[in-house]
Amino acid sequence: MIVEMQKGAEYRFVLQVLEKIKELGFKYQVNLGEERTVVAILGANTNYLDTQIFGVMDYVEEVKKISKPYKLASRDFKKEDTVVKIGDIEIGSNKVVVMAGPCSVESKEQILASAFAVKKAGGTVLRGGAFKPRTSPFAFQGLGEEGLKLLALAKKEIGLLIATEVMAPEDVSLVAEYADIIQIGTRNMQNYKLLEAVGKCGKTIILKRGMSATIEEWLCASDYILKEQNNGEGVILCERGIRTFETATRSTLDISAVPVVKRVSHLPIIIDPSHAAGDFRYVSSLAKAGIAGGADGLLIEIHPNPKKALSDGAQSLTFSDFSKLMEELKSIASAVGRNI
Ligand code: PEP
Ligand code: MN
Image (cartoon, rainbow, N blue to C red):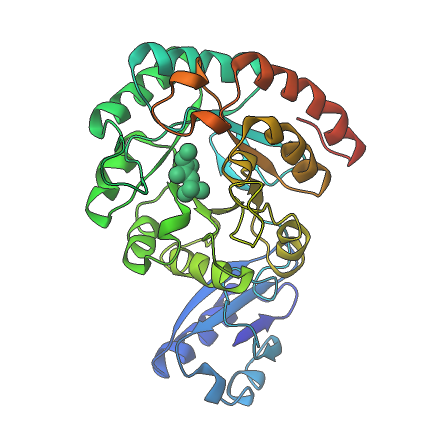
C-alpha cells in the first residue's frame, strides 16, 4: 500500500503516518520525491488494511493499493527516474554509462591493460570478476581476493570505478571493501539471502536478470535489495539475455525489457550484450540496439587477447573492436537525445 502526501506537506505529518504504520505492526519506506513524499507500507498483509485508516490523516492526498507484487522498484512508489550517484558519476541520467573489462581478472598485466583500454575508449567503470560463477566446477573459478586486490590496483593506477561480482553472503563484506559497484549474476538473482546481504552493504548493486526470470520476478528480486536500503536507490538492473528456444546465440537479448522496465519501474537499466550474444560478432549490434532502445548503459566484456581468456573469450571484444564500438555509439546515443 502507498500513502501519498499532499504537495508541500511538512515532515511532521509524514511522521504521523509512519507512527501509525508502526503501531499497526508494518514496516515502511519513505520516498522524498521532488513533488511529494510517498510512503510505502511493507508487509505480507497490507492488502487487508483499510485505506481509510490513512486516508483520514492530515495532509494525506491519496492511499493506493499496489496491485503489483513488487513495491519499492515500482513507479507507484517513485515517479521520477532514479539516478544512481557514485562520486561524480551518474547512472540513469542523460549520459550513457559504459562498464567494461574482462570476464575474469587473470593477472596484473591483463587487468591494467584492460583498465587502460576502458578509460581510453571513454568507459566509466572497470568490471572484472574475481569470484566467478562457472557452470562446471572444474572451470577457472576466479582469483578470489587476489583478483579484488588487482582491481583495486587498477583503480588506483587508472582511476575508474570498480564493479565485481559476489556469489555468497559471507563474501559480501570482503567484496564491498574493494568494489564501488557489486554485481549479482544471473544465477543468483533469486538467492534472497545474498540479495539481503548486498542490500545492507551500502554499495550500488547491479542486479542481472535471471536467465529464466520474468520481468516481474526480476523486479521482486530488486525489492529484496531495496528494502534493506534507506533511500531505495542503489540498484541498477541489467538485462543479459534470457533462455529461449533459439540456439544461434547463447541467450536471447530481451530488448523489450528496456521499455517495459522504464514504464513500470524508476530504476536504471543497462544492457549486457556480451552474455546475451555469447559471440563477439554480435556484441556491437546488440549494444547499439540497447542504447537505441533507451538503456542507461552497457556492460561489455573485453580482453587483451580473447582467444587466451580464461573465461568467456568467445564473446569478448578486442580493445580495438571495443574502441570502434564506443565511437559508433556516439551517433546512436545522440539520435535518442543522449550522450556517451
Ligand atoms: C559475468 O558477468 O561474467 C557473468 C557470469 O554474467 P551472468 O551472470 O550474466 O552470466
Ligand atoms: Mn562473463
